[in-house]
Image (cartoon, rainbow over all chains, first blue to last red; front, side, top):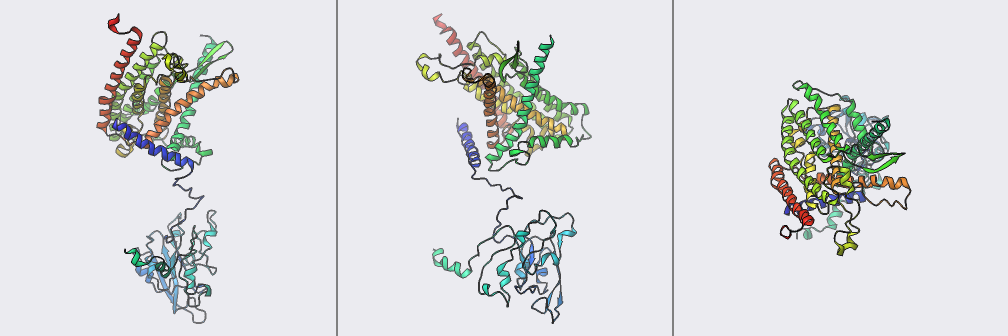
Length: 218
Length: 369
């Protein structure tokens, strides 16, 4: 009889779950193309090359990202800026910039390596292609446009959601020497392109103030 | 046989077949939905409202897929096995009365494929036949996993058929006391479960008046044994060693694809429905239930018994799904232990006990003669 009560215990679990699911709570599935689950704030999606708010490219063609890449999927070649109409604030700019998304392991070491925060990762993750050539993102497809919009690989694709490409990373745009006054001294992440909008993350100073260290250590 | 009689027989068979097909198609969908709910998922929801047409879509897909024939198969047996699986599955349901007989003019049409006077024996025979399909499919595939599945099917069927048969005997014996002599006809067994237990114990009459005269109340142990045995007979979880995906790929149907695989699949779900229908018929009073003849219009009160039958059958089927979603698969030795050391002795013991009780109720104590 012991086994019967054990079986009954198991049946209660599944039966209870069923009632809960029918009742509308506890459902873990989202109907993906119809509804997008919010990505974690620091989700590693596809890359984007950022611009300063004045329109200058952040990339200075230093190839540190290519050196840091463990999968060897980044190919960068720099070029000297034209002194009369510079592409980037520095001496040089990224002339060729290619990422092979089939090789990329989305570790974000390139983001860590970048001295100017030119390359960052978005929340965009729909990158399927029908041939290998399309999986190599060139500079045209990586560099955000002047309005801060991430380019789409296939803008004519009926499934392309242009709305989620609109949001540029505010913090990333504000660290320029000639950055927007509104962002001066502000430390936060917000508005990363992708199917999620997050509240600004508090800065480290603010967070330390909220949870005193001596209390946490007991 | 006149043309009218022939037409009636044809109508009975076609009606039963139609019900069986529709119910089976719904069952596959229902199982996926129920199991999905139990696992906090959504389940099929693309084809039709709530995904109700999913089975049709799957069937259509299988119909157009290539039926691959591996090189090493025993061709004749390999081709025959899917049909051997489907035919007994359909024949079993032909024995089940699924509604109140109705009249077309002078002619009475029973909602039952055929009312054999050996109905229960026929069911046992056919469910043994279904095992041949699995064994032959496993053997003729010329591959090791199907063979293992086929061998397991033989052992499992032998072990659990005995328990199933013995639990049926108890019901038949009890049913014999409820009317005029013993019977194996399912229609007759259903008729004997009409009404309530009101007259059993005069003192408890006000309560028992509302307890239907189903065999499950006096024969609850037989019902439990029968239920476990039919789960094993239909190769359902937790007794699905025959087609255990994690161990032996697909078991007996590993080498089958396309429409031939679909036929095995169909046979399995038809079997679930027919076996649940038999459980509902033997133990839960079949199509019996209050029809409110005096209040409701004729065609509704004529249809209600079918509704009751389906409700009872689906209650049993739901438990099938529930158990499938809950219990892990038995190990082979556990399967054998449960079959030979628990169910068969249990069924025999219950048979002896109910024999004594029935004899006592009919003849009194032996020394008082």
